[in-house]
Image (cartoon, rainbow, N blue to C red; front, side):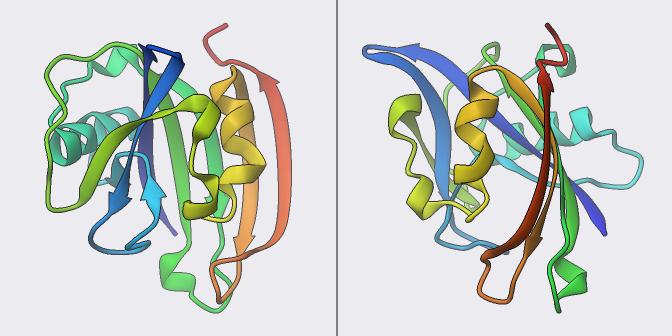
Amino acid sequence: MFEVSVVYLLREGKTGDEVLLGEKLTGLGVGKIVGPGGKQEPGESPRHTAVREVAEEVGLVVAPGNLEPLARITYPFVGRDALSQRSHAFTTRHWEGHVRASEEIDARWWPVSGIPLERMWADASLWLPRALAGEFLEATFEIGPADEVLSSTMSWSPSKNA
């Protein structure tokens, strides 16, 4: 099982909060809408992975201390053990720079009230809106052969930074 980090960058938009998401252009999940993120490299902490991936995928600079834990999720992929992973999700409202395109993700801002959950991984609808509203999630989502959620266990708590 490998480790990944993903970041949900938030900003205040004209009609409420917006989150930076993008269409995945390469690798696992091509075509799905995702937050910037990726695999942990040797010697990296989950926070440093998050910082590196945000810079690589969308061109923004985030300080590790500005990342707030959002969720820690284990994803066993049934029949596809090589894809099984543990995801460390973070959120932040603090960064420098401007969003730019990359080969991995075509990012844009989405209203938090209009996240395209139907275009995301199947588990997102079960947790992402609640987590973005301020709760921390510890969960396991068992993923089936058609990328569906076969089973889930979720434990919610107040924000880790509350």
